Length: 374
Image (cartoon, rainbow, N blue to C red; front, side, top):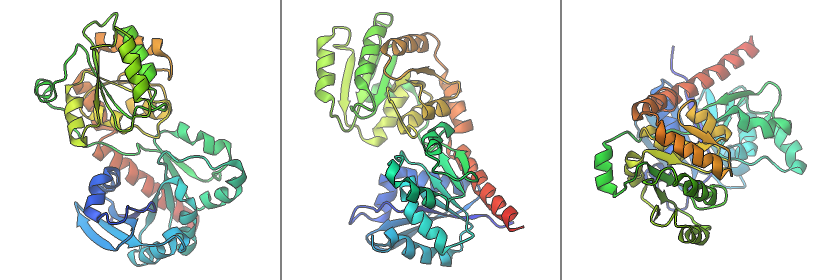
């Protein structure tokens, strides 16, 4: 039986002047989802909207840069013409925000099942929902990291009853465990426990609650050190003031600033605990990276994190610094072994595991279509 041919389509355009190779480096999730499914046996073609045309075959995946403008149904007609030549069995469209383009593709290619993947997309405002409901009806399936993330869409009745929901992690990580002693030497990190935060210093990530929880936990964990790598930092001044004003945090919390992505792996390898205060996430890339390195997660009890961690690590309620403090203390006293965390990652979150889940979803949509035809 020939492999399913799946076209993964991203309508979000690349920056002008950015080449295909550079895009695949800057947008690793685009590559990881494609190579995961290819590794599980599907034939994958990635179609990326861009300002210039380009083609590349790499690691078993065909990548196409396609020139398309906003007057062309957001690029849908141009991409539909390419898809007609490619004769894909399944269309996988990145982002629920591309519903209009996805609907245009469905009209141009009737009978080809389509799946939409959530990427932290927002539910349309109520006065636009009738149109979006019509567009979403073109998709046979929708993918979220956790089924709970679909609830706002279901409550708004944006999906028809026959739409299949799939729970598949938004991405994966290629990080691996390594020597903690070597990582400490390389990064200068230390602590017992050594706790790492990787995330923006913004309200949605809630660093102030994390600091409050760390301050409380420090009474039971006097040798704990918290290391914070971050990109954008609208709350930086508040974070600095909070640290300076609390003797339990001064000398214990280290603001590393922006760290190159390749160095994040070394930070994770040096850590005993990964902490996050996120109030909402469509997935959690830093959490995936931490677990890939075998680090015990202490993260908020939100749907995506619950789906990713399973029985590994400790969960706490967003905004509850007391619960975070207890979670840190318990994780330090009874840590999951790096081997157990990595084993969980391999089984549920690795490139191979995620790829198989994608292929299962594609095959289900094709089976549904064949059942409809009969």
